[in-house]
Amino acid sequence: MRWSHWLGVALSLMGAVAGAQQVYKSVDQQGKVIFSDKPPADAKSVTPVEIKPGPSEADVREAVARERALGRAASEVGKPRAGAGQNRTSGVADAKAELADAERRLDEAKQIGPGDRKGTAGGGSRLSEDYRQRVQAAEAAVEKARKRLKQAQAGGAR
Image 1 (tube, rainbow, N blue to C red):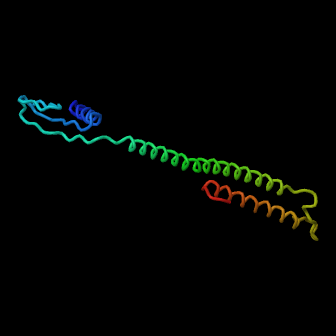
Image 2 (image 1 turned 180 degrees about the vertical axis):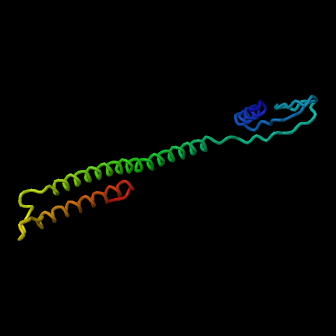
């Protein structure tokens, strides 16, 4: 930044501290800009500078209180979002575990055991109705678990 900008900032701060003291901006014969509390007699041009007072102590306290309240509100808004993200992660993990369990039960249900085959009149055998229902129920459980996992990954509820 230019030095004249910093000088202006410094003078405005001095003006706020000094109260209603008058400041002048003058340009000397060589074109140099000077800020002072008294206009020089040999200045080429002199302009009074309006220095606005800074905020009062009450204004500062009010602003600090607003800033703190906004900070607390922002941190409160962030808490449910973080919790929701953790719940979603937990929901996805639960849904994956449920799907793995359902797939394991389907594999078990497909195992042909004693009593799962019925003899036919022609001397052959066929799978029993109990076997078909057991496999069908396990397949339905796998499909339900897949849907739940998809919902959990999308952020939805059960």
